[in-house]
Image (tube, rainbow, N blue to C red; front, side, top):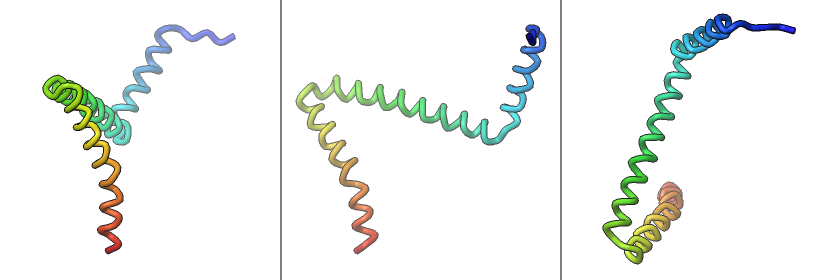
Length: 83
């Protein structure tokens, strides 16, 4: 049975973290992950403020219009490219 001491484990973890810091892919992935996290938080705050300001009926209309635009926008770009 192989027994690994705590100091050996810490050395392996430090080596792994050092490799992570030197990797361009890992650094860029971390920045993208943080960017998406910030975007989600800002979007959540934005929608909460809009919902509180508009009320249930107006917020429903706002969300419906936003969803319609999100559905139609890709096909509009496709149609513009063809014609």
